[in-house]
Image: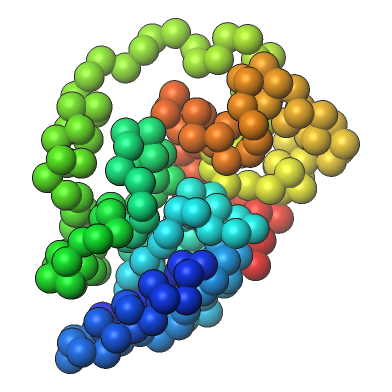
Length: 223
């Protein structure tokens, strides 16, 4: 029996997936989440085999929620099921720790196959996504330091942002005041010319930042 949590802010999507998994003898929907924070909590409390994650989640987006689940519940396989399949979104989800990536509109058979695969420890992507993923990771990595316009401290803060840490957790990790971290994040957004936290995280993960430490940092849990 594969235990599943569905995290999506649209009730109709959750209803459709519940109906799908109820129809299969080998799958059990054990919990649903309507926000990123609820998804993180369910990953810890329900210990599912697979957590299906929409990236456009309220309060904590799907990228940050996936990264934090990798820290606080590393045995949970996150399978992204979302609307977008552009390179930036796919690669950012992978850097956050997603083990699979499907676009909404996938058939019932594709969803069941993906759930079964990631539960078994495999990674699964659609054919088009897989080709881009292979091309991306086979390309030479840049030798220069990313974001030269940032100070070393700002780059460190951005790296922790990309790991999914809150400003409070970053302050604890770096031994800084919350005000200093808030000022650093504002400066980062201005220098990168991004609208806010989610866009900065995507940019950082594309540049190779945001690889989580083996152990969760103190104060990083947000559930």
